[in-house]
Image (cartoon, rainbow, N blue to C red; front, side):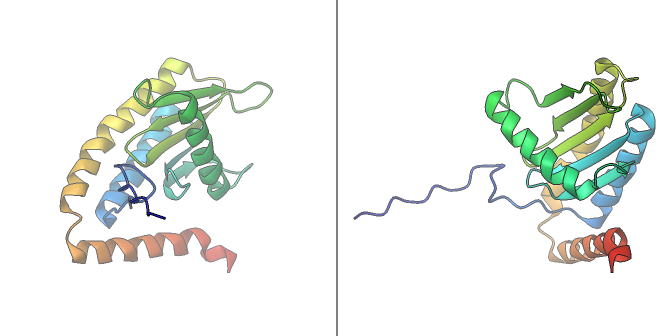
Length: 174
């Protein structure tokens, strides 16, 4: 029986690894804080499409941010099978009977997703304008980062930064 050659992972596929420097992660954190203040969102996540949290901010009292990251990534994957990527990078879900009025998703890059939860006070236009402004601030930084992440020292610093952030997030659990 002849083996079928394994296809190369396409850009943005699960074989691709996101790599961020500590400087970029700090810029994303700062941008999330600005977005949180400017958009009146209840909470915000920037996640990898696997559910890994890159940055977060806001009130996650009802559901843990780690749970939201995993569920959010699954929701986007499911909805993207229904709506082609080229048609829209944004998906907004309106909820009824909840203090959360809308969950808005925006695909920022091949593997990167913005997730925003809003109260009923925010209009669709406000939510979309805020997410588009966030994307216009972050996308040039991501392009710049992808060009310089071949530096091994920068990669080591990034891993150390991520480890520090994880210790901050989960340190109180030990």
